[in-house]
Image (tube, rainbow over all chains, first blue to last red; front, side, top):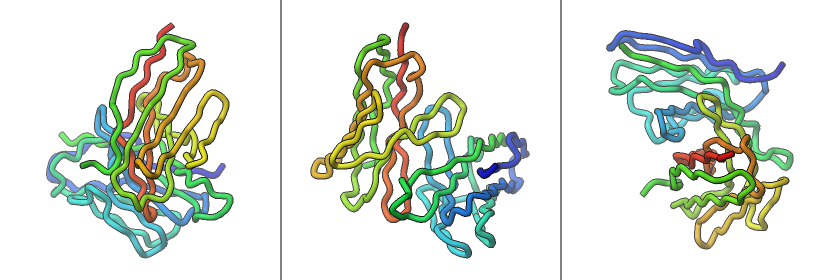
Length: 116
Length: 108
């Protein structure tokens, strides 16, 4: 079945370690997004990519990095520079805008990162 | 000022009642608008897109007022299963921004 796969679902790391969260989609979508969600908060945009080999910073990009070497993959690295990395991370993709596209974002099930 | 603002609630509403949520956005260049629903510890799911002409999907009605930069969602005949967080979402040049969400509790 087509969809977005995030891994791992749960991740524990020590403070000061870099962590890479995986996001893979087989929906043939051009655009991909990374959001962070803290308890009781909405989703905050970290990075997004509209096309392969290109990406833009969102509202809270500091301490994160991404790459978009393949259309299907948009991994997120949480670096040691991120001051409060413990959060729920959501990856999403969206098809190109067109007459049949409602603009819906398709989400993965998320990755819960806990930094000890 | 945040780009998308919503009343966080919670709204505690008896089953069968009508409830309305509002959302404001700050950037007049925003191009498209959505309401998403998020259940506890789950990923958000699209509820409906929002158009200036207004649109309805069963018990749900959404409306956009571009002049006032205001989006609304109306739920009629609320059900217990409507309990969730409702997220207002705005797109500007592919930058898709979520509001913090409004929590709704439907009471039996």
